[in-house]
Amino acid sequence: MSSAAVTHITSRDNPLIKELRKLSQDSTAYRKQGRVWLEGDHLCRAALARGLKPALAVFSESFWPLAQSEYAQAAIKTIVITDSLLPEISGLESPARMGFVLELPAAGSLRPDVASVILDRVQDAGNVGSILRSAAAFGFAQIIALKGSAALWSPKVLRAGMGAHFALQLVEGVEPEALEALAIPIVVTSSHLGSFLHQQKLPMPCAWAMGHEGQGVSDDLMGRAALKVRIDQPGGEESLNVAAAAAICLYASSLGS
Image (cartoon, rainbow, N blue to C red):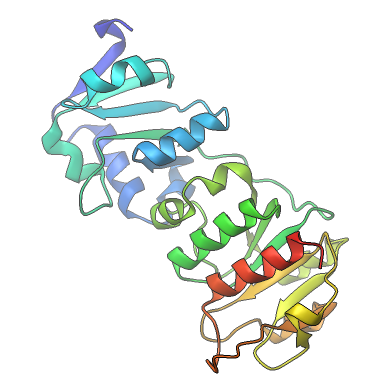
């Protein structure tokens, strides 16, 4: 790529820097801008591996000479910024030296027959990202985030998801009534209801419902469930973290138990 095709930015007042600052630090800015900021080599590689074409590739001045051979043709447009601007566009304690801007994928419709995970007001970004990783790993292709759940494309969820976003159909802002369209059974976990997971025949495909960190699955969603299960905890703890519970449940389903 010739140097003429690269735009250099040195001012923190540049409009693009202001846009990236919002995308990196505001959890819902992606909804207003229609774009997503992927910070760091791992997320960028994950997007490229799924065949995505970034609108912008952004590199620090010091990293650009090293990045040219691998990333020069990765995006529609390439931006090189002075290193001093990295903290301006980063949500990390140690800013990454590169990032991509992707057009926000078009909101998909809920697919009624696809193995899914329902997020019922799960609010911690780390938990949500971890659940997305487990879903992608164990063959659950759709995430249905009910209203009140963490923003799925927020910077923190993106980082915790480690690239899982690009393997999944993501539907957010869903009202519980929309779940009536599902043609697969809803399965919920409870600390005190239902059979133990390891003793239960699990339907597949199904939609696993994971509830709010403190309140668990809502009564409404409990009422929609075809099956309720408990995770045996011989160590005696009261409950598991929702992301840990999700990993256990999705893995059990993937085994066809």
